[in-house]
Amino acid sequence: MTVPHPKSWLPPVGEELVARAPVSFATGAGDRVKGRRWFRDPARRDIQGELPGWPPGPVYRLKSRTGLVLRTVLGISFLLGVLALAVVADGNVPSVSGPAGAGLGRSKDPENEEEDFPVLWAAPGAVARTLPWELDPGRRPGTDVTHLVLTDRRLLVLGGLQDPRDPWEEVLWETDLTAVAAVERCHFSVGGRDFRITFTDGSWCRLTSLEGEGLVARLTAE
Image (tube, rainbow, N blue to C red; front, side, top):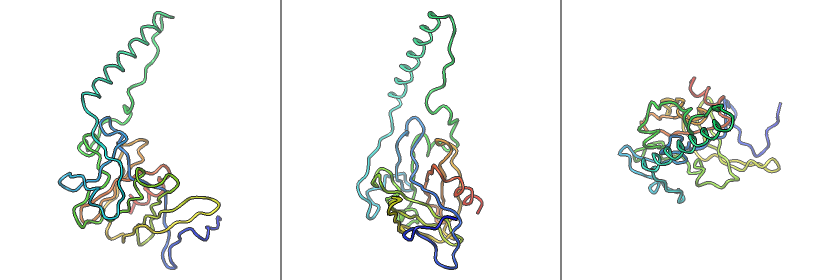
């Protein structure tokens, strides 16, 4: 049994730790939103400048359809040239993999996964607006990490420095489980690692985790 470091967070006596994993706001994987994320209200306005205490972060724009079409055409032309050279060389046609992102399949929510990619959706005063800015990889220092923690009573976000010599972490955000309406997997994502938490007021966030299978399984089973 691993003894927790004295500076690692533990729930108080009487509260059970169910699961935890490092998480961040997700990142778009579709062609037009790849590498991007936005923070929206129900009118689809960008609200990152309205979120209290948030430092400035990256400002993204959708990739243009024209640029995507041009890159696709150039990519196809390049592949055809490679195939032609291969055939001339030995008469065999090599197999060619599909374009980047082809394995994602078709999105069931293209409005929020292909034409836009909000990772926070919240009206003024909604629960999702209280989430900490440290969840955004574009804002927090590269040495810091954020964890989502599920207990038998609460959902929490911890932030800290995961230095094995001197780790520390603190509670950045928390809410009672009664405020969580649903948790669902977002299959249209790299490795299927994204998941969305919807709160009872209709606001939601989209998170991702490289090591969160156990956490997501418990959240979606609740």
